[in-house]
Image (cartoon, rainbow, N blue to C red; front, side, top):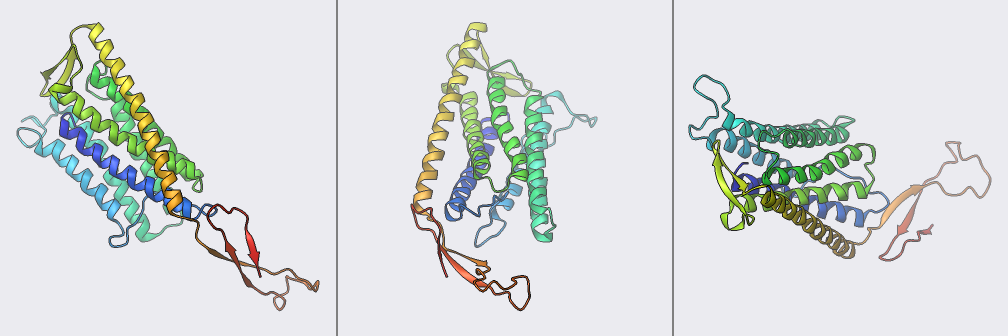
Length: 307
């Protein structure tokens, strides 16, 4: 981060991940509204762990870019082995990526080893990754008072939603709304980071009354006085509000399209038949099982039971 690519690249990563979760959670709920159970990640047909591999690759690339590729000497330390002030933000950003890398590794391990609390532990690992992300942006070494600080402050709201819904997913795994809001927060984080990258590091998009200034090894946006700074922050707030409305319209519209395209699947449930003779149903010799056909069509919510 700290550059256009450093914000746009992870922004696209969050955007793709959010769209992937938004589509799959909406599809899963449309097909199985009564038995829906959320999942921290979704496998694909050809490569089961594609999502986790994507997170691992993106996180590793981010760490490499921050600590080894980006710095002029291709390493972030001073000759005496200490961390220079102009590279503090590199370690902060790489720490966020490291946490997501650990999450993906443990998600893969939990799925392979299949412990009893594997899904809940995966959700917890995701929540810890977002808590790390929230902590780093809240205590960021970059300027909190300028335009970039305003973008970071608003980004923390979206991260907080991701953190809370990840924790709620542990206690409410069958809540579609929790998963839906979590997916939307991913999408919004991605969109916001992309907008932030272009606005803060494209000279033509810098707010009126502000300018780009090179400080401590990276470029920041400064404004000519408090009046222009206040105007720029207000425009950032307006951007946030408009993008929030846009993401909301897109997400709910996508849900309606998916809900229309995928109807609830037929399910077969095992049940005990009514004992018409009054015999003891608890007797092993008296127990019988039959399959009931539950057909739920589009627009039909009443369950039709046929024996």
